[in-house]
Length: 487
Ligand code: NAD
Image: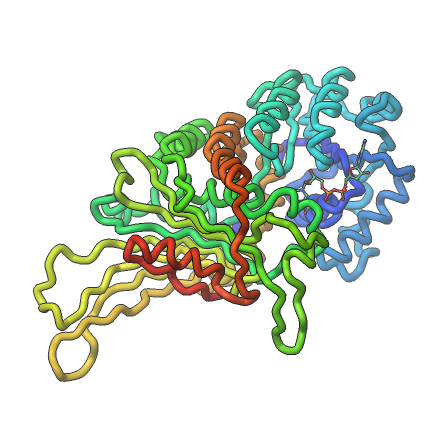
């Protein structure tokens, strides 16, 4: 299936932190792919800005290496690579100093969109916003893009919001949660609101419970220092999982427009019941050996034998509104689990009465929406077990992989490609609004504070497993079981 590419309006994009890891791994490769797709016009400029001393040529050389490593570019002398690199410039500047800003101002063309990507530590957001505005660059069609982590708690998130709001209007601020840029996450809205079939059943009358799983097989890797200060609750639940929960639980927005969608997501967050201590389980992975390879424990990986940071969290979430009261949402996410899998599983209630008798067995319909890998949907439907011997019921999957259904000869755009183009187009639908971020922290903070006040320690779980046994007990208490984590 071939998608249409409509070029975006002319723009200059400044990447503050243009020499950093995110710029090299995600932002530059994403821009390169959009350039190759014909979405970025030749007149556009991409300006790296960072503290290192580099010439334009030095920056282009760095970008070429990043493309080779992260965008699978084998021939960096190819015409389209050289054409892309020619769009790049570099300015040496310090977010906290004045040097370099005049040069940046001179480079920016008049009468076009200016996007400022703050790919730096959040502690620099305020300084950068102040200088961008102070040098008169926040005018007209200017947008500012910021990355997670958007705060460490409600207080820090409010301070960050304020530091941006001092110089930019909310309509100019794009808070990236790259999960929202994933094709399949957007598909959640298409599945819910593009099909008549599901929506009438999408409530506590018909849905027994919903499970949201984001399981990783990797450990903390090189992110140990950051991760140990954050933990799974701040790193995954407060942002990515909260967004999934909102999309799956929200009311139909009046239109597919930024504020209509974001208003509905905010209503879900505001309707969340505070989580009781016994409804959350934390875990930390132990060392394990797989296929002869030894993997370190969480504590070894973060070089802190006394760390109490969680690499797993499982929790029961309740939404106090008419649609969902009585239907729990079970969320779990963790590292070093049995398989890599992000999936939403909607478990419907049993039929009100079985005409086939107790021996036939009750089977509930289950709708699984797989976000990664192998994106697709499966609907478990109940049929008669084939053969003679009476009426016994079994569940069989109606299984659809999107790549099979759509043909997978065209690569799917990466989340950053979509999100950066949305920034240029001025479409905020897939970006978090300030009040959404704050509401999510207001719900998360008491859970984390509770752990600290109680001196709660995470339960150790075996690497390569499905998580701590406490998480199994959490759902078993309600007479339910976690679905199998499968790739
Ligand atoms: P990094 O440390 O690799 O790069 C930081 C960049 O900021 C460098 O270019 C550096 O020169 C520049 N910089 C530092 N101090 C500066 C100053 N005073 N003035 C001007 N420039 C300065 O960091 P990163 O991994 O690229 O992350 C950037 C931001 O994106 C962080 O907020 C991070 O949390 C977030 N983020 C990163 C990733 C990722 O995959 N790397 C993923 C999600 C979010």
